[in-house]
Length: 257
Ligand code: MG
Ligand code: MG
Image (cartoon, rainbow, N blue to C red; front, side, top):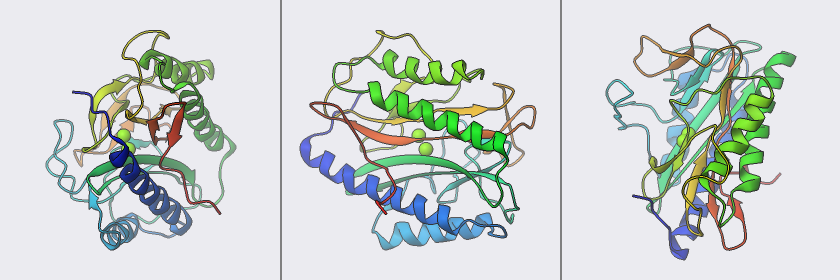
């Protein structure tokens, strides 16, 4: 089922999105060389609870993970790209960290992910992150009312494939509303003009991700963390957006400086 939010739900979604954006911005600021991934998890838990929100992750138990996730944020480092289970690990200079966070506030969910380098960045890591950010921006630019889902998928794929990456189609974006993962699936490559027609009140989590030299994933022994098969670096950018009467609003932006 595809959920269309009414105006009141959209207003609540703005608050949820702002909270997710604020938590990710705070964690990005705090994550420096020597920070432990479990500290990031604990800080995130505190911010979620202080805001009166609920984690979408802690009890999450989907078919593709092993048991309840048990943590509040995904922390994927270097070759890890999706669903990174926080471990007792201190960040090192040059680590490429992806944080992915979803919470529910006021009955509405929001979901966002950001990749960045801790300490001194390697130019190739910055380029990898930039391509996912460009793909996300391109998808957002076409995601207005009347657009087709295929237009969004095509916009993502055109940037990723145009930059020479092969796209993994096992995981992509999704509808989001009263729960985190809903229909429709938003593939990270597709054909323009095809599929579901976007309409006001539809909320989507759009999330291009890429691995430097492969499209194949392997599951970590922890049962959750997904890594590149070759051990190459990876990046992931995600925002929750809502379709409006005349365009699309990005709900999970970091707070304005
Ligand atoms: Mg996410
Ligand atoms: Mg998502």
